[in-house]
Length: 415
Image 1: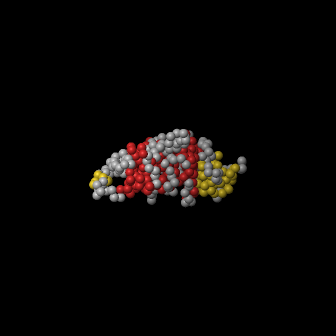
Image 2 (image 1 turned 180 degrees about the horizontal axis):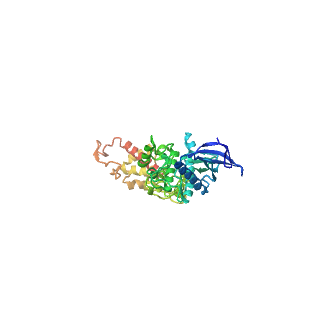
Image 3 (image 1 turned 120 degrees about the vertical axis):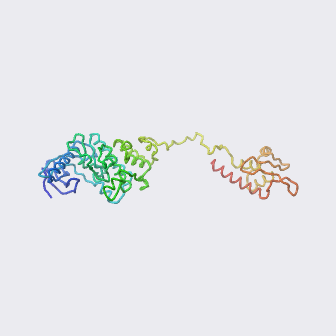
């Protein structure tokens, strides 16, 4: 291990970066610990020119970005065949390491991480810089939950002198957008697709496009639609399915047009989950940007002075016991009504109610029921010459049971 790079004193090796070794070092001028990213330029001339150009492009791209969610670049230099960039030293873990631990990140925390990444990307895009390689290994999560985007090594700047050759594919296959796969010109929407792939993996534990080799992965990216995240993780709300689907849209026109819009919808989803309010998936499906308003499903409490709605149009003054006896009086004889009253301990209807029903104390009178719940009564000759209801045997029991059921239903509807 080398001990010095320019004025920086190498403390230790952090790991391997996309283009070379990353060191932990100390800047003696201000006694600050920094991370030193290097690239070995001991290459063939054609490779050296391209790699060195892209390396300095990263320094130039990241160096002009000052945002809380983007790693800060302090310095750039060259020592022999080694070019280096000095940047802030982050104490935390790569998102890749967190995902590889096998422990699924809670949905709310996943949204918080991706919101921060989207905010950083939005800032970079506003400065005409596309990252081109958004993936978990380029996202650092520090101890306080703060998120930083690293590695703008293959970023494209509008003013860059180093241009990607037509048809040349740069990026990580599992996270590449369809336009990257086909080698087309890309813009900020490509970063949004890659971030959508990363979000899908965080929510479900697997990438949406997978295969045994690069060609298989690219085919999946171009031709398949993954299942919604909620199908693999029941904790994912339906609203989030729509957000992920929009981020992963293969057609650029159907995708989020900017990272800020993506971040806004993710933030709204997270906030609604924390408040426990039902998600407004239908509005999102129609392309309406979510707002932090009170959802329509939440209604204000009804004042006690306001009339309460009554189910099925029944009057709240409906007296089920009295109504049952009035119905019995209209459909049975006086003796049957009295027996019904004694059996079920219900008060007899008033004399006026009986007269209105067509019954008097002198003799029983049969009234054909107009209530469709009962069969039409047919007079029949009894042995003693009196008029009785057809099928009079067990009539009282049948009427009692039916009326009790009716009374119970009315009670449920009213009370």
